[in-house]
Every structure is written in C-alpha cells, then in structure tokens.
Amino acid sequence: MATCASASQTVWSYKGKQQWKLVLLPVFLILVHLIPVNPVREDGLNPKSRKRIMPDLLTEPPAIDPVYEAQVYCNVPSIAERSMEGHAPHYFKLVSVQVLIRHGDRYPLYAIPKTKRPDIDCMLVPSRKPSHPQLEAFIKHMSKGSAAQMDGSLSSLPHFPSHSLCEMGELTQTGVVQHLRNGQLLREIYINKHKLLPSDWTAKQLYLETTGKSRTLQSALALLYTFLPDFDWKKINMRHQWSTIFCSGSCDCPMRNHYLEEEQRRQYSLRVKNSNLEKVYVDMAKIVGIPTRQLRASNPIDSLLCYFCHNVSFPCTKAGCIGMEHFKVIKRHQLEDERERQEKKLYFLYALLATHPLLNQTVNRLQRIAEGKKEEMFVLYSAHDVTLSPVLSALGITEARFPRFAARLVFELWQDGKRPKEHFIRILYNGADVTFQTSFCKDHYKRSSKPMCPLEKLVNFVKRDMFLIFNSTSYYDACHRRAL
Figure 1 (cartoon, rainbow, N blue to C red):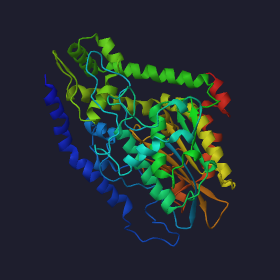
Figure 2 (tube, rainbow, N blue to C red):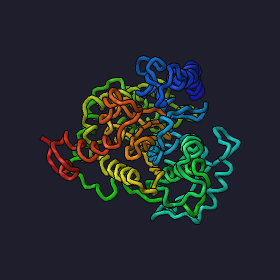
Figure 3 (cartoon, one colour):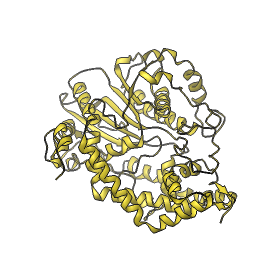
Figure 4 (tube, helix red, strand yellow):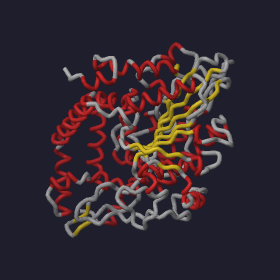
C-alpha cells in the first residue's frame, strides 16, 4: 500500500504525463475552430464553419481516462481560455444574454469517516495561486456590500469565503478565481465588443437569481464584479431561489419525482453489478476502519476529488492509504454511469419535467426582449451541477460533459439587422457552440445560411414539443399523467 507521500507523487506523476494534452488541447481547438481557412462570404459567414461542435475527439484519450476527466472537472485556472461566445455575422445585433452557471470549486460536502479533512485554506490571499489581477479589489469591494438588495436569507450570507480551514461546501479561492475569469471573459465579449450594457446601466437591465448557498451567491458576485461596466452595490438586486432546479412556483410535479426515483434505481443496479467498485469500497473501508456500507454512504468521490483538484495527498491511516487506483476505479464508474444514463433515457424524462419551469421563464423573457422590451437584458442564474445537468439533457446536448466547477451555459439572443423582426439564438456550453447539438435545431444548419437557430424553434420546443414524449400538451398534464 502506498504511503501518503507516494500517493501525492502518483497523482502528479500521472498529471505530468498528461500535461502535454492539457497544453495542446486549447492550441488545437484554436487551430481547428478559430483560424479562418476558407473565404468569407458577403454575409460575413465562413461557409464551412456553421456547425459548432464540442472539442474534437482526436485531442482527447480514445477510451475513458478517469484521471484526465477528473482534471477537466477540476477546471483549475491556468492557461487563458478561448471561447465562441459573441460570434455572429457583422450585421447582427446582440440584444440579450442569459447565463446559467455552476458555482466554482468548493470544499467537499461529505467527509470520509475517521480521516483527516483536506487541509484547504478558504481565506482569500491575492499572493497565493491561483489568483487574479482583480482579486484584491474584489475582496475590498465585497466588504462594502451593505447597500445591496438581497432576498430573504441571502442577506445573512457572507459575500466571500473567509475561513482558514474551509467549512463543508464552502467556496475556495480557486472557485472565486474561476468566476472572476468567467466574468472577465464575458465582459470582453458582451460589454467591450457588443455593448450589451451601457456604462450607466440600471438595475432593471439585470435579472440575478441564486440558490441560498454561500457558494452560489459568492460565485455570482465574483462573476458580476469583473463583468459589469461598473460594479455598484446599489444596483445589485439578488433574488433567492429555494429550489436547486429553479422551479419557482411550478414545483408540483409527481411524474418528475417518479422518473427521478426510476433513475436512482438504475444507478443502484449499475453500482451493485460493478464488482471492481465493490472491491475498492471494501479495501477503502478496511483502511479507514469502518463498515463498507458506511464508507459507501459517505460518497467518497466527492471528498477525493477535493484532494485531487488541490494536489493534496489522499488520506492515510495506520492500516494504509487510499491511493490513485482507488480513485480511478470510483471515477471510472462515475463516467460509466453517465454514459448509461444517456442510453436509458430515464434521466432525460426527468430532465424534461425538471427544467421546464426554468426554460419557460427563459423563453418568455427572450420573447419580451424580441418584442422590444429593454429590461433584463443580462440574466444570471447561479446554481449547481444538479441544475445544469438536467438542462443540458433536456435540450438534447448529449455530448456535453457533466458540469465542471464554474461551468457556464449561455443563451444569446440576436436581432437580424437586415430583417429586424427576425431573432435568432445561440447556445454555448463552456465556450463551445452547441446550438446545433440541441434536439430542436440539430438539422436547421443544413438548410440555413445563418450559424444560429430561429428563436421560434426554442419557443416551440419549450411550449409544445417538450411534452410530446409524455403524450401531453402541457406541463401540468405531463406532470400528472401516470406513466404507461
């Protein structure tokens, strides 16, 4: 059994071997997606670049590589990120942006029993890596937030993490930096380039909503600090969403709960079939000195990912150490579970019902703006992996990875300058254009000269087509119609 020191060496010796992949990946994507190699037509389009796809499989390991996937999930700030946000023919005008984010890197929600918690400092220290040029100013500004309007319990939450030993689920400095970078990137595109908001922006031009966790509120504030033309507490009106799926007043949906229970049974069935996973749980339970059932219930992957992402040695006891091989087996099972989830479709049915309230709110707002309303032009929902994942599934974006820390899903609304009454959308996930991966627009690019999807296609999907699979015509009917 490896020692604690060798466990850490194993993590980073493997990471060292993989480092060239992480360096070459963005370079390759720049070469493939961003450098024009074909003549541009008069309408401002590259005729062979309309379909945007997720990263090319040739840049990634051909088989499941749990360590590589864990590195992607960690999303540790390093090299500058390139994105496809804000790309459109020159005669199009950007009129609205709606962003759904997952909070940044956090401390584990669960602890492995009888082991020392990861020694992670949640104090913000600008001189400690990873950092950001505006981190020091962010800390000072967050200390003066008494003028902000915060719904309900949000007013009692801290505006930035400040514990020398992180509390369970607390946002880390890495998490803050991830969203400072997100905000900076989106500002360069949407504010500096497309002038989405004026310098004298008002509170009515924003719609901000977060769940009641400090990590989601703080992630939203970090992104807004670097995004807004001038961060003014008096213009910040943060709404509280009690539901992690943002169902607001439309949460009564028995069939959604039914499909979620079926999905959980599928997960359990897959787990009990995995003999390698069970052997790992038995071995880890012996190391920490607890029953296997208790070890399994502590959801060890959540804690182990924190050790991994922060380059901290996996925990050890007198009986031995939890090692990289344990981690890889559990992470590989997690990836296999995601793959089967796509195939079985139970999660997809759950996702359609779980996300309709949020998508319906999104569509209603886009329609109002398309009709000329000048309010809520920039929208930010600060949420969780259990928020983003079903939205991706419901939209039909099956190639997308499970939401990493600080993941972002963006809806852009564009007005055709030549036909002002026509509006189009683009959907981007972590900077990649996934518009034509959606179920409602995957075939549109074949017969369109524009690299976008007509707004009415999204409207029809949310208002009508989402319910067809349930043999229903409305959300209420789909929620209350028993499965056949």
